[in-house]
Image (spheres, rainbow, N blue to C red):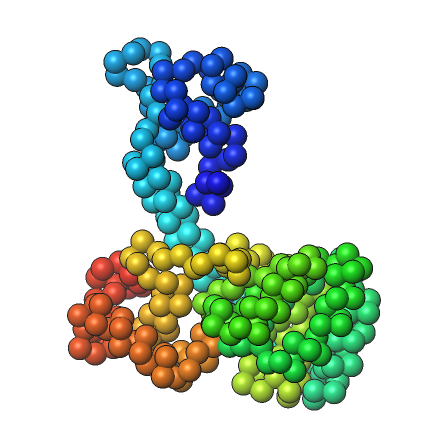
Length: 331
């Protein structure tokens, strides 16, 4: 199926029929695919927009199908451009959300603010999460920036996950790409999928976050020490921004069953994020933490990027990345 490349099932069926019978008309194609002539014409419009069929130069009034080797290159180039645009939108949303989070995550307990509640200590956080999950009715969205899930975390979370999914709650979780290297994490994600949960991964996440029924969000007061406490946000404006961040991240994330794709420059999502972080002056330790990998892996990734860019320093790598279009020129 070519739906992953932006081609509908009906258009793909017509495209395949035209490859088998290049000179067939609308009626003959409809007989082959089992669709109505109106549906075939609609599919032909879609194929024309995607440049997979063209007007014949030899037979006026007839459409000529583009060969698969050229057609697939067209679809893949189009999809790569869409992914690049999605990544840019995601980065913009992430920056806006990071600013929002920073404004509220450092609130002092005595600071009154509508729609903001601070929980001090791990016990208070756990108690509040119990109440929230008990009252949960429709949807749970989560950022889980763990490099891998521990056996104890998986075991302790399963009963609640099973209960929520049995109640018909829609569960969507975004992990880091690094969990793909953890067998227990993969097995747990597959178990969730079998019960109806949805799991995707991205190269980096801005923070740990839980959104309950699009009306309550819980984020840690410190990403370095999640046991220190959390902030519970219920303001409509804040929730709208955080839900938008989740949806943008979800759209750019990859289902766990699919392999991650490379951008037009041949970079994986991890490499692309690492390049941005290095260009911003982050250390190997900081990059490793954001990506959920070891400092050694982050160091190797930085060295590989420098080698590909033929740079002798990280500063030079950043300059060359901008020159080659791998990074936006912010000047």
